[in-house]
Image (cartoon, rainbow over all chains, first blue to last red; front, top):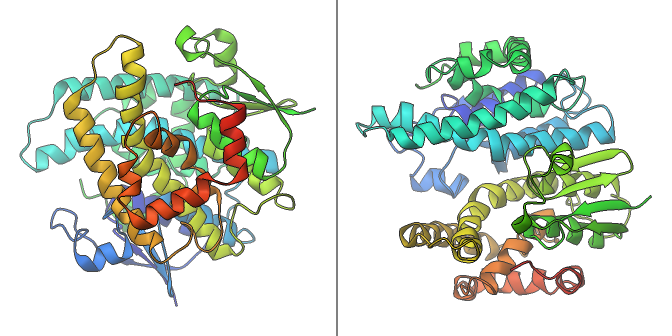
Length: 215
Length: 215
């Protein structure tokens, strides 16, 4: 039985799908349309009680939260595909650190930008320009720290690509495409070098080809 | 050499200390006073470039983000103290899931309440009542999901206490004491039983005794 991934059109499920491709794990997708509120049906809430994407079903094992799913599968399939959790205990710690940094520093202002610049427009809501400006400023300060880190380290956790880098791909993709804020990456020499490296991995290119973003 | 933990008076740091006590790991503390801006000095930013707490120094290994630190030490010291990562691969996945839920659903509205009601008045700022009301409503909906989960599971990830439960202790403690919102826990039968269980663990009692909260 092949693991099912819900909501491939959206950003967070793409963390999971990229991880599956890197780890050579077969998967199926189940489309969920958020604009049609398919994430708030009783059936969906039975799987994911907070009504967000993604959720996976692996036989009778259900798991949600994209960064929990990627950690679980990267550990479970440690012996196949790309090593995504670092090659030493210390490197593993740094992978965890930068996964947390992504979740708490990179994601929140960027997610807010996606909602206010992309999704609000689709829903006929007037974008809040003050908030958009604050989000950009927060994100700029975070990317300055990233540029400093990546000036002395090839990837966030060290010399090798890991879950920490992978986790930035889905929302980072919005930044360089539909949000029209590519300069935030390009103006920072080391972030730019790192972004080109990770976004040109065959796994990521395959994800956007197979599961085009919804906006 | 004993691991050093920065900022024990503050909540996020207490995740790390509770974990160390459960895993029987010796540690030293270094006090950091946020109100005096000791987290924004060049020396501190050299350790933790985002200027937040905690950070640990273990010889020449530095690590930050409390949930990364506890995952690292729970894995590294797997063979001693309390098992905090589940007893099977599947249970480990659920520990990761509920750690993510804590970080993305429980923590944000609760952290905002702490800032609005406890920190801001200390800085002479007036609490934003509309925002406080929204935070409470968000948190209430999250706790309803928790109550449902805990009606069929002794702890969040299964039958055993884990990092997922532990991670709720520092900010949950604010809810019960400084914020005056104990009813949010007590009004929910299963959340209430779970809170009593986890907060009465000797490790948590010791954390509160050794490192009283800053507020």
